[in-house]
Image (cartoon, rainbow, N blue to C red; front, side, top):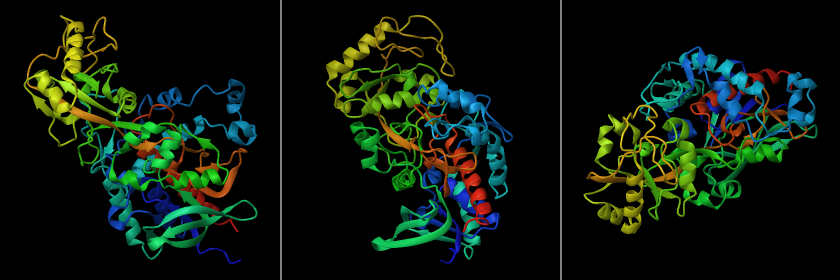
Length: 489
């Protein structure tokens, strides 16, 4: 059989796929990219994200980077297995190499390579800086590219367009199944092109960079549960991420990694068609469900460190919706408008009864909830919207730990909030070169994973690390796949 003309086949055109494709080409490989979206919408989730990186400067990740990952590394693994982490990977037992927890060495690799990836992106004309956030204050340090993720897609996309005679891109084409030879090596994919046309594409190496499964309601229902019907992708790009990359890898024997039952959750206005229409002012008011009842502590700590947990609680409500309720005191919060990215006007009324009617909630329930909350608010203490101020309710369940002030002064306002799905956590395990590891602890020859296909998060997202993960793992995969082309058959 003749050797395939393609050295590296990349599935996906977001930051992970772009980083893999461009790096492989720069290393001398012949590259083909498959992208489900049409050319004008290429870029997946990356196209729509602000793409913050958890870094304190261009040369170093944040001080809390590895600690935050360690705190969310996945359940309570057997210490008798983990003790062998001190060994070199080649000498670790198979049960550890394939264990469904994040390898600390991979986190260390991302931390080490993130500054290199940032500088590499700058070589394409991208500029990074400390940019305005939709948080008034933050608990860590973040940088981002000027122009957001779209700037990354356009910069790397321009490189691919410039080398179109050497990097083929098949738009509106999705991979469906891996091709595997008798020796267990991946040698290409079965894909589906325009008009339901099946395609067999052979390649020496395949990089799966096609995102998670936030755009697949069947997989979400299977892994997240029935409440998944109330969530939606945070941006248009997420609708193209339907989980084939994860499924193909698992079907090929890849070891699962990451929290399949969870995802990066953000609170958004369900009425809005805006990109990422977050509503992050709720800590200064109260959250009620569509029965008019509070269900969580709205101010446990800084919003940037707690919004994901609160948002999942919103998903768990009867119809997956809540309302952030305020009085005129919201205007005491200087520049609160930056925390709301929805351009839909809040519901507003001169009385709580009228507000409840606008919210389609029984007025007696909402008024009773607000009265109980007001009675539990402290009567002294200084309100400080920039940091936890200790203004906590007393004798109220659930408690509000900070920023508790009575809701008494009209006009009264409310924003509806649902849980959106930025990306899913469940993926596959990879080594420090982004090579996919199978359930026996061995690498699968010719198969790589990058970006969201890599399982990295459990329970709570370590903020401002997803695009960073995509760039780093994409570059690792592209470089190793390009090197391997010289030894593959």
